[in-house]
Image 1 (spheres, rainbow, N blue to C red):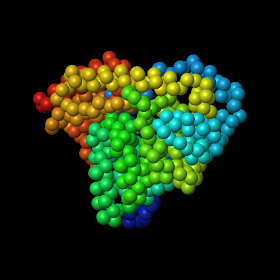
Image 2 (image 1 turned 120 degrees about the vertical axis):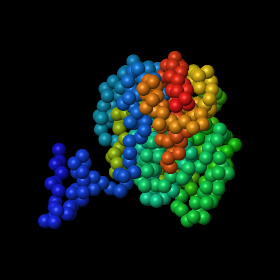
Image 3 (image 1 turned 120 degrees about the horizontal axis):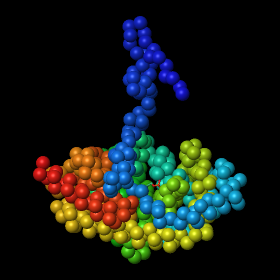
Image 4 (image 1 turned 90 degrees about the vertical axis):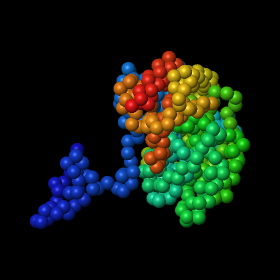
Length: 424
Ligand code: PMP
């Protein structure tokens, strides 16, 4: 452990070193980079400690329900990877990622109409790392990132860490509103702001639960192109739709203006930490350099395990199984909301993990949270999903992890809290 230097003081007692301006709790306080000021624990992280207690029904986290995975086969696969390919699996690998896996990723993306070449794919440590790399490569402090209102909390954290200014664009039941996007980009250009990225989750949005209508997809792309803004399509839930075929990805309609972010976290398992980004040639080279400087190479052990799973297991039927299970849980969630919380309104997601609930007039989801946890139910207040402090009238409820019975019980408890709150 390094011991911080003793405060360096002049004879007049004035601190002269950065460390001297620290506190007893954190003697290094004055040494942090400016960007560190923008890093804070998400409201979800802080909640996990409490919400993980078994007596609490957590409608807060976005953890996939892994008990449906074929654990015996996965143990075989892990063993085979080490026994048969140990010298590769346990070695450093390529910064861009394993080539066989990149070819298999193309097969996964074809389900959403994406045609690409293995060279276009960069494997990342989850799509969270892809968000970090893209932001690192494009965003200078003060640049604008345009994002849906609300937006995925983990993306907002990355944008904040790189000192971006996030400007929100409204969404409705059909996702991002094209006219509002056009207007916002026009206003930003008139104000002389540099807009670098449009960040969007077009399928089964986290947290809003809505999807971008097929008719709006070309419109959004046209608007972004006209304003010279690169689109970041973050799509971890695209294959988890409850009805019909997956919608065509934005990347399937534009291979120059879209960075597509994919992940095995929700369709397989987050523990391997395998995601990817598809990018045009020049951008891809920068992303690989940025990734090499951050992590040298993504884990070969994880990549080879995921690759072996895709090659030897019927992964499509696993995804189908997840879809059916999550649909049942979505039904339990919206059914329980209708039964117990008719004073609220909510989205009915056609896939993914989340529903977005608007509380009855006058209630504040953040203030109510401690009372909900006392009543043994947890959720994420809407404020976590905005850059500008909005969202106290909303909460995100996840239906991915608890069983249907637990979901119903959680919503019943929540309804009790809301009723008590309205009587306060
Ligand atoms: N994007 C969105 C919209 C997400 O919901 C998540 C996970 N909650 C991620 C990215 C990150 O996922 P991972 O790093 O596990 O691929």
